[in-house]
Image (cartoon, rainbow over all chains, first blue to last red; front, side, top):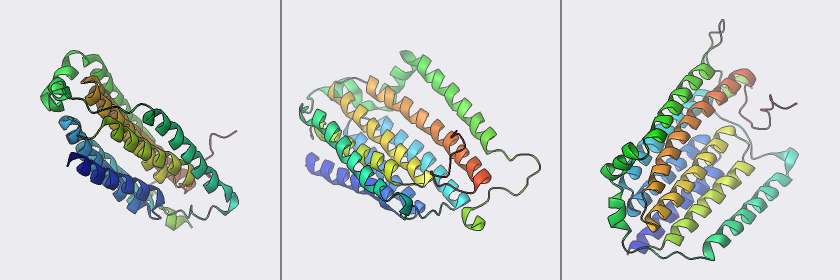
Length: 179
Length: 100
């Protein structure tokens, strides 16, 4: 039963991952990405990581995908990158390298099958916010503070990069308008 | 309960799809999404192995990865917007300002 659930959710997430790569419209890619993130959050719950499942939905689905969608709406994002006539071999090479990567990674995984543990739930305490927060604010408080500084730096960096230069007041040009 | 290896195989498949997408697509936004997907598949690996060894450290690491991914998205999209303003294109082949 649990295996059937895993197979179904995993198939959804894998199909969504393929959809991200193969969609022609960037908006469709972003929505497939949302599906991928949501199904991974479901898998996190089955892996005793309740807090991270919630964080996944909030940070990735709620923050990152929305940000990407905003940028798509801002700049259009229309490029006919499927033509790629000047480099017809790039698709063959890309898929070939992908297959090689998959074979290499899956070889190292498949040669040593890991059985599901019996007693991990008691050690992980289900990965509840209380358990994760306890570890985060006692043993790992220094990395936590460093992450806070990193986020501040990223905030300032995004602000500086996204700022309009003086004199030009026309905002972000869309790509369609420029053609 | 599914074996830990199944989760690792799923993570490997999603990572491969993301890496292939980075190689195949020329739209910088889609490449961005593929990178996010790869980060997520590594998160799945970390969480599966955290359960395997009954250790919370993997989950803490995933928390840090999420924060770094959020920072990366904010800065990366700002760079993309700045480039669109400058060059009116998000085709990755035309973004070559740093090329000598």
